[in-house]
Image 1: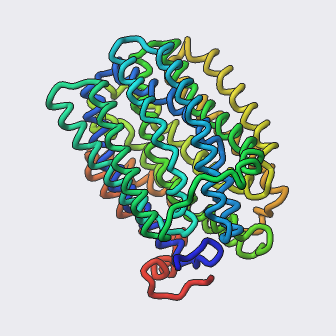
Image 2 (image 1 turned 135 degrees about the vertical axis):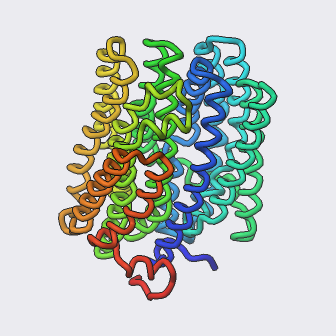
Length: 483
């Protein structure tokens, strides 16, 4: 019988997170190459259309889930005996929602398009949305803290998508060919997920109405919050597109895709830890605080190091991935790197708000963030362009983080978890930035800078106590971890 969330050990969690991070880094490397090729295939203006279409469809597609999956994971982690009832209810609600969501996405694509190619590509992507109704099955891997199959599916999709982009680039294709390739790639991944889930538990959950009503009731504030988060995180791309044109939207979108790609770090950590945290609340306070501390420390290690590297190496990174044509967008990479740190913390805080049942109050925070973000972008983007959009992203995430911390600490005593490792990790990131500056001043290229970062950052973490040998031994299964 696969392990359930409430029985997961520190070793199991650490191994699952490490596996995800390693696989996602490999996929990120492939994704960087594919993104570079994609940008070169489409050019600034067409890439601006492509990325804007994706953002709009993604915003509307959110209504097909609207927080129900997060609620289902929380409830199923607390009560494993009713797991299939909760997952079946997720499937039922998604099937009901997909029809109107698909229609709304079609309308949005028609209203937004600036060319026939953009319209056809958008329609193809929208028509594939109904096939996502069975995605609830993938939640079974999360609930068992066994994300090997999702990582296999991720890699399969990355390889297939990369191969398709190469062929389209060589054949001189455009957005229509890319949209067809993306639909086929996603369908292949869905098929593998279905087969693997059946093998994992011996059967599939079936759509059921048993918990559909309570699921919807609990998911409404979660969904509203998620929608608002997506809105204030994505609306800047649409505003840049509308206020400054496709060229600047392409520049901003090219750097923003790096921010999107970096979500694999907090996403991997919370994919594993969210069910563990949910299973510990409210009955096991000690385990809860330990899980929160470990999660926060891992988020700091990943995000602080990324910010240090982005602050020093933005220009060569952008030149390598996107080409000389996009170097003028490089200055916003460190700005969005700062936003990434706050977004990483947000993954944890959002989960804690959900677990402690304070989601309705988070809606107000996210609504205020959306108003703040839109107002700032409308005021600044016409004058300062996509640079202003990047600064507004950072400012908005700072406001949200401050308000979320205040909300979370009402139920979870964050001051009791200890911040020693976090402070030491901060020092390590600052030292890393200093080493990179020195290496860059000495004429080091991007390859050398990457080596410096990959070697010096782990060494600094070990030397200054950001992480310990014990942590490594736990992952390698050479020391018994605490439960």
